[in-house]
Length: 455
Image (cartoon, one colour):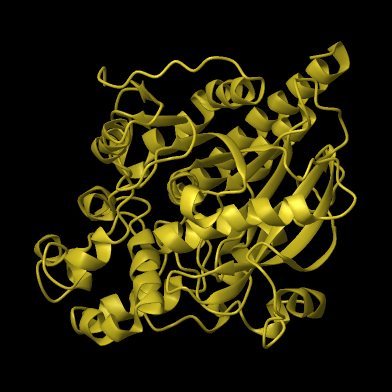
């Protein structure tokens, strides 16, 4: 890496860490000062419907509304694209992402095999790629953003920080890694996933829909005109938490769904590989509301089971699902944090997830049954209070059992404020540099260091 690229990368990385710390402070202040909020099962807040046109500017609605019907084409074909403003905060004056942004809408396939439109952002770096071979592409799966359309990463990159009354606030934490990566010469394409920004409900943590959205984002980036990418060039999958599951799913599905892509590696940080294991961990935590995202996703994807699921809900539970579908994660946290799951359900929730049809529905989302088509790095904190280490570890052992090249890294950061999910968020920062170096090594053709049989 040349001196100028190194310096710019370090500067961006330093600003990323400071920005992330700012984000943590913001969330901490929200948690600390909003404890007296109205109860989460009060009457619906009329300002909560952020799908109201007053919160969705005409230009956004025009871009994010797909043609009906979708034009003929292949998965990964670009339906439309336009320049995208990239900022770290709304004014755009406090730092910049060293890349040109392009908002894209591309064809993909949902979990039922139907064509759908997905949006995202492509980042063309200003800096050259200092490594070996052509400029590489990172297909980036964002972590949990929420379930409202305003939470779509491709919208947040235009704002940096999103706010609408009453508590609809979002800090685009993923932009900080993006700023570092593009400064180091990586091209990036980040998907919004199905239904985040586009019509319909976001299919949160749906294995197939997320994996397909990642793979087709890679295809779309390679098919964009006037980029520095080689259409047959190398790419890698990257993600943490929800994004880690999406990256892992893409790695598994690549051989059958997108065999033409030149995948060199996958980084899956804290992947939610077995959703059933999340329920006791989410219970009583700051992010207990993500269970509502997951149930909304199941209802959207498998409507034939919608009534069965709704029959299990108390009025309070039905109210939670209705509310969180229009929220970003910070609002969900502030309105539902530290609540227990059982009052939302008629039956024992922890027994219910082991009964049909729930057992089969959640088993369909289990990652690890297929084989990744390239080396993989899995990272997990042994004391992760939200996405359990055991499920991530089992994913690694499953992949090793299939003969895959897997390096599993355990973060031993000790338990700290578990119900505030601190030990889920901090490893993303602590081990981010390790993961970026591992990805860079794959693009530079260096030997892997698998540790199957040792974890």
